[in-house]
Image (tube, rainbow, N blue to C red; front, side):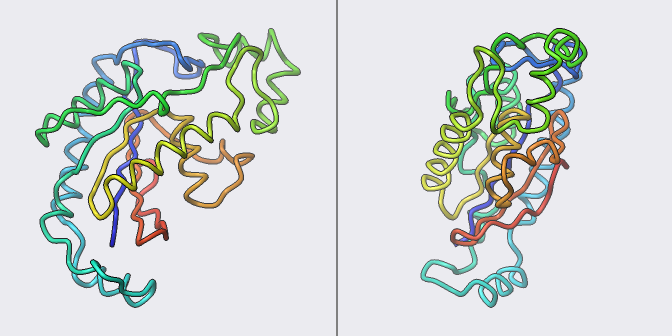
Length: 228
């Protein structure tokens, strides 16, 4: 049984400076951000329309073993089962744009929201470096071990995010499903899927409206597209 996860980052925001920690601050999309997401929604629909080919299904069976219910998913592989999103406005509005083409309504999940950066929220990278040079260095070198004052610890963010994703995958087993979240949240999910330690989280790029495609054959994840 193959479950396809379309993992998407929200579009550009009205916050302006991209090198700024917005974190849990609730800000809307910019007009450009809405256009970015609309374009990515088209790409998602095109990918869905291709479904899972018989040749690829045969490959999955040979490599990972056929199980009951592993027959050609047909139409089910070409229609989104659901669209889940963070409850912050920038992700929720992005999800609404994607839902419009599929006759769905987004399901808001608080556990998918971006982490709180505490005293750093709303500050640019340059401002943080200047005001908190030692703390910023510690964060950049080991984000797993350090969290800004008043911010959410990385391990706690990972625990809530992965628990939410696991539940979503269980509830939509064998169907394509979309999650619209944030740069930090997406990186945590991708690190988990790839078996990478969170120390390497900044080695993964997530542009505005980034589209990532992950196929789960049973519990075996395959990253098909990164930051598309």
